[in-house]
Length: 162
Image 1 (cartoon, rainbow, N blue to C red):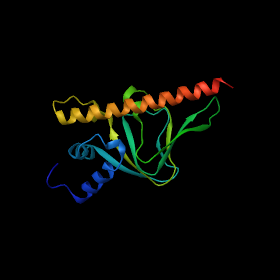
Image 2: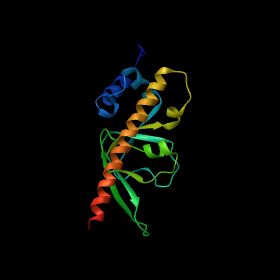
Image 3: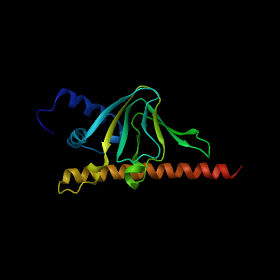
């Protein structure tokens, strides 16, 4: 890691290090992630992303919670489908598929979020460090998407029983 890392950077890296999401990354990789991301503060009710919008970013919740909501049926109503807490991510579907956002993400309370640009993940590079970061993110995304698929399958099976 760079020798002249500011106290603010060190504090942010400590926060990232405390989250299981970032456990595969080295401190040097966390520094690179920090340099290529934005920290956001959202208040209760703030919409982080809108369903249908184009999206090339994903988010990791550093503090607080976010409710994922989707349109249901023909009515213009939104239904909560998932609540995410500190250490969880969202927006990975748009990053992986390139499709528009599949849901709204709404802050439930004061929430701090790390916003990452997918172009950093998709950037062609000869840097082994950046390649390692890219691989780790996509491995994390694969695990999250597989877990959510299993959960969805279980819900569909339960729903078909009634």
